[in-house]
Image (cartoon, rainbow, N blue to C red; front, top):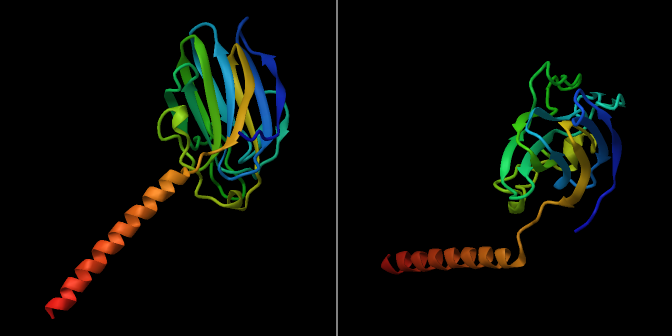
Length: 205
């Protein structure tokens, strides 16, 4: 598994004794990259929030001004113990997330959930690399190349949790060689059947 560079900002105390806000920034090296974030909730908490700032830019929870122009992000949330998917969000809604001045789109992600105590994993990917199922199922991969001419930097806030840390960073799995072999075998069989049908048609003429 290849690990990519990313930078961790520090947590800020949020309203209660336990809940804090955490800010993370980094940069992708590959269109199909996945960045994981791990966080813990020790008591049932309403309004645990995951939000990005890099598409249109803005000021994150740490108070850092994040430039706009980043790629279109997707934020997904999973139960860390089971890998079960809880939610996945592409775009936010204006004015909850700002509009990019160049495109007019509110494409930063905003995800808010009421969560019981436990451990969770969030992921950040580029549109349209969605998780088809659980975290262990991987991601579909992005249809964009070179981040659709936008920048590859990202910024994510994890709000109202007890602790949060940067997790693994990797490129979405591609089909194994066995899958390619099965695909080629299937295409060969289709071609063979088509040729036989063509030969039969020609012999009847």
